[in-house]
Image (cartoon, rainbow, N blue to C red; front, top):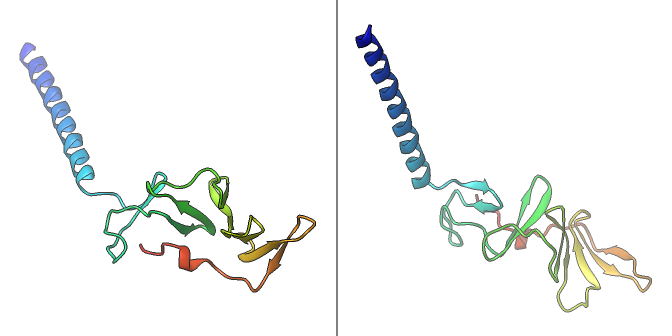
Amino acid sequence: MRTIRIKKTSFIIAAIMAFVITVFLLCMIAEASPRTGYVGDKYIHKTKSAMYDRGEPTRNAYRWRNGKLYYYGNSGRQLRHSTKYIKVSKGHVEYIYTPGTNHNERYNVKHKRYQKRKKNGHWTDVGQQTNVWWMCDMQE
């Protein structure tokens, strides 16, 4: 009876050790291969290009995601608060103000149009609908 208990205990200990070793090895493999795509508040590139290496985050650029525009700063993190030229609401960009216009011209992301401020303070769309693709990181 005692031999059976020792065998069961030895088996359970061996199984636990095997499980712990397996989890440890899987964690090492996951660390060795960088995750790509949207990881937390960063976008990690899946491919290599002239601008970014594979595994490098988007920096100082905009990215479209699910119909919303996001800005990634120098650290590679998504901008969460408004700056002098970028108005952020709920984490995504709403407006991009044109430098040198004293905040009287902006790009409205929702309308996909540039706007000018009227003398009464209201904004009016100008020109045709456009996308700011030239400022966006489109790399996978």
